[in-house]
Image 1 (cartoon, rainbow, N blue to C red):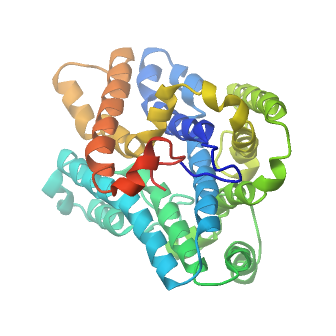
Image 2 (tube, rainbow, N blue to C red; image 1 turned 90 degrees about the horizontal axis):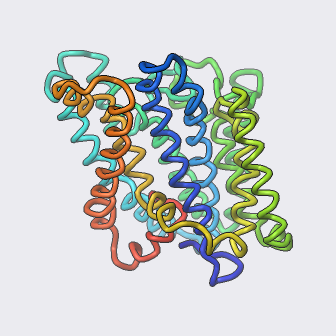
Image 3 (cartoon, rainbow, N blue to C red; image 1 turned 45 degrees about the horizontal axis):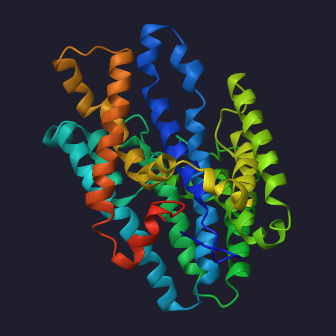
Length: 367
């Protein structure tokens, strides 16, 4: 687990958030089964689940800040940083992509130009649709959830480059100030915080300038000011965390702040993440082990679960399992089981013993 300020502090609460974020996205994608039974039931229960992506991004920014604060500057540090990220992400990503490809039509994919382009973009982490922000890929197509990995990989690459500078935080500030504010003002003549982004013919430019990246930066800010924030009593932070969770539950239940972005669901997750971190000395020992394990498998769960709506889902129909509560429950259970298998036999296998040991307590499995 990443440690900070107090070397004996493990952020179990943040690891649990990571798992809950993956769970919320999964439930969002399975909600249609419940809508088939009772119109709009799934939307009412889990329509907010897509916002778990915002929490993912924020946690990534927080985790990377903890990592980079301890890292020296220089070429070796930058290469080591990218190597560590690649070992966390690429093996599981590509193996699950291959399985998704085989279950989703395999070679017949190449009979369709759009599906072929979608597959190639998945292989090389390429945004391809400039008029479809903030995804820039077919998020309803095969492996559609990968759109978030395009942002993650871009963020990791950018931060590895920042390690080349002695004053890495100044370089980081200047880089994102340029890409998120100066470039949009110069190229598009405006600046926005809306993840709808800017009208452009370049999907890559759209991604690099998309305001959804502010979520990563929000997590980074929490990590940077943590030594100052730690002066707040943990018990008081726990009370504020409770209030933040109740606020989020209320707003989401009322259909408010359900969109991506810092000014929609993002600001709620800023409060939740910040107070979860600050209340760790108070709440950490009470975090259920099952949530820690859920955090462990969260990356694989995020990648695997959409197969229940695609390749695996077609097999449900072969067995006469129609959309509804049974398919919903089976989809959840099978996704969790496959995620554990992926984490145990793919993620851990491609990580050295030295790196894998913190994984059971690590804030984010793919970081």
